[in-house]
Length: 402
Image (cartoon, rainbow, N blue to C red):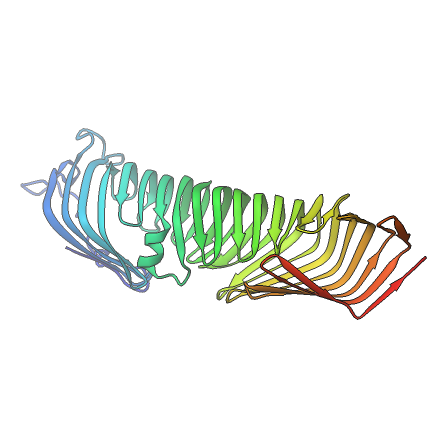
């Protein structure tokens, strides 16, 4: 059997209608009470409008009246359906070895799905709900799904390398290409083009149409790594929108600890932050961020840190970052202590092996070292190179106060 939809969404069955009953005929057919059974059948499906096609194999189905005595205005048919070793193609990308099992009640307008189970190399999905209108694909479904992102990435070739598995539980409603989702996603470990997540838990609500989407929610992860950056116990709230693998996020980020370039910041908060991923390039910015403390192999910062106008770009394994102004409380390094530091025009470049930091100006408060005390200190043109935990630095000019 062939089922097809053209570019306008018109089915090849659109002109087939059940003829109305004619009381004057000698033989009357009651289609609503028919018992239909299919065994070892095959269905070919094509939908030009939605770039879908497929082939259902080893199809078995039983269709019989739910209540033969029900009036024609409310009759429903009980349907039991199964198919194995089927193929589904979306936008020219095939998924093979699909098994389907379904139970429900249907009529010419709507379907009540008691259970629909789909198993494939990519996912196992269980659905229950209602399709209120066959013609417009109007539906409300409760969904439980486990997705193998590694298989999905390899088979669908989305352009973004995905690794790991995720579980989704929620409600999906839709009308044609438009859909709305309200649910939760959990995963022990995920990876996408260098960004890795552990113990991810997402609660989100949003909508989409085709490949475009717009969601708001909250994400919590035990660990997030991207290049040289690592966030522990991270919480992200806000909205994300995009098309396919490209996205834009606006919101707030909090982390118990951030580690990068040999330093660790605790109690990190970024407000009004923005991030965008497009064509393999990740950019991020925040008008301000703060932390409770900062520590490196040679120094510790207490009484908090604050920074303004943070901008980061990660492309092809290289990281570029700038910070307009950064302020820190008390700094302790060995026998030296500095009460307050302000750094301006900070530029950071890293290729994964060596990190170069350039600071246009550094202002130090009172300094105590080896029993001596100084006033404020201004340092111009600071350059640092970090490699394998070793830091080398130079400066153009130092001016010490009294």
